[in-house]
Image (cartoon, rainbow, N blue to C red; front, side):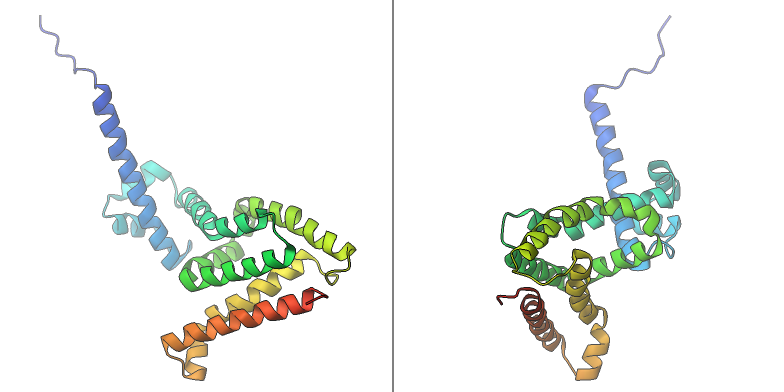
Length: 220
């Protein structure tokens, strides 16, 4: 009597199946990034993601179970992209003034190259800080560790004014981000072309560096 049992999958076949599944999962994640960046969490549906990926909506539910679970995963990836270079700067064994200038330069670069990403992160943290706060832990740890220590040491040596990091970072980031958030308003008000606006933001960044360092460092 012939054995009609289905043959076992070979190791090669299993690897191929895993690659296909991984490809589908990554395709959905890339589509989700695009849709979430454009519409935000509240404005995005599972159908939007499936349509953007050109896949069946059942696959979205199969891989990620829920929109919330998928969003947290996407947010984690995007926040890491946003703050990776700033974290590297915070970890550098360099002087405080040089570090602050590099942070300003990096924030400017991110706002110029990835304005949608920065606005997305700010908006979503405002919407659901409680659930997204764990993703900020590494960044917060470095601010409350390395940077605070450098500021406190500089205070003791009379090199900087008495200022806390929770005031310093909004001064730096707010001064730059407002210009990009209000891009259309600034272009309309001052009659700026796209090239003019690029020059405007470059000049503004240099003003921010000057104002922050001149205010903060007593020897500047």
